[in-house]
Amino acid sequence: MDLAGLLVFATALFIAAAAPGPGIAAIVARVLGRGPRGAVAFSIGIALGDVVWLTFAIVGLAALAQTFHGVFLAVKYAGVAYLLFIAYKLWTAPAEALDTRGDTAGESPAKLLLGGVALTLGNPKTIMFYMALLPTLLDLDRITALGYAELVAATLVVLGVVFAGYIVLAARVRRIFTSARSIRRLNKGTGAIMVGAAAAIAAR
Image (cartoon, rainbow, N blue to C red; front, top):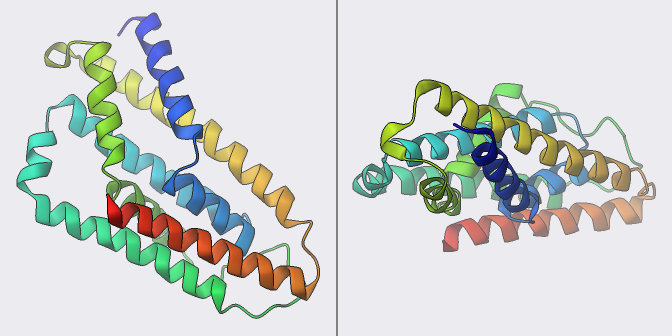
C-alpha cells in the first residue's frame, strides 16, 4: 500500500477513534472508577476487536457477518452484559478514600482483554467505518499480505496513541477526587456512563 493512502487511512482512523463513543466511554469510565491498572489490557482487547473488523472488511466478510447474524448478536450482547456488570460494580462500590491503585481484585489481563474484544465486536459501527473507508483507498481484491500487515500496524499504532491519551487524562482526573463524597459521585457517574455505552451498543 502506498504511503499516501496509508497516511489518509491513519488520519481518518485517528479522527474516528478520538471521537467519544462506547469504546472511549468504557475506557475512561473504567479508569475513573477503578484506576488505570488493567486499562492497558482492556484497551488492547478493544484494538484487537478493531483488527477483526478490519480483516472482515478487507476479505469481504461483511456478507458473512450478515449470514451469521445470530453469532454476532450474541457477541454484541456479551459486550453489553460486560459493560453493565462493570456499571453495577461501580454503582455499588463503597465510598472510601481514594486508593490510587484502583479496585482490580479478581481481574485477570485475559478477562479484561476478552471484555475489550467483545465490546468492539458488539459495535457494528466499526465495520461500517472500515467498509466505507477502505474501498476509497485500495483495491480490496488485490491487497497483498504486506499491505494487510501495514494496515493492521497502522490501526494498532493509531488506536494505541488515542487510548493511551485517554487513559492518562482519566488517571489524572481521578487523582483529583479524594473525599468519600466525591468518590461516591465518581463511582455513580462512571457507572452511568457504562450503562449509556451499553445502551448505545444495544440500540445499534
